[in-house]
Image 1 (tube, rainbow, N blue to C red):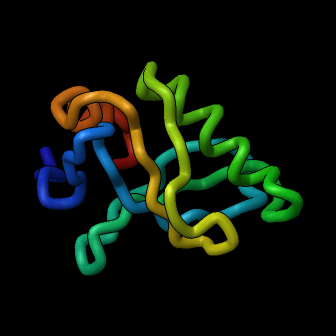
Image 2: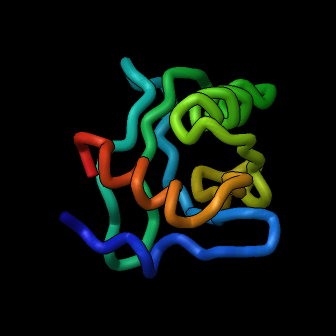
Image 3: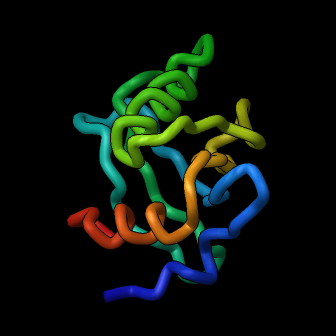
Length: 101
């Protein structure tokens, strides 16, 4: 089991994680972890146009973590920071359950 504790930061609002997003993929899923820059690789099905990929990320991660999710940085970039409005323990638990991580 990988140790993601260094890649997820606790804030007063919740847990923050960094994503490297790849759009126009067949399925929405975590697809790995880049240990060099501490980012989670995330595939999304939507295009990176008109906020479609960002909307999909917030919607699907809300389902994944059962908590509100907001993109806090990188709305026009493939590198994003997301705030998951729950405790870091829950976020780490869910991440460890992802098959590709």
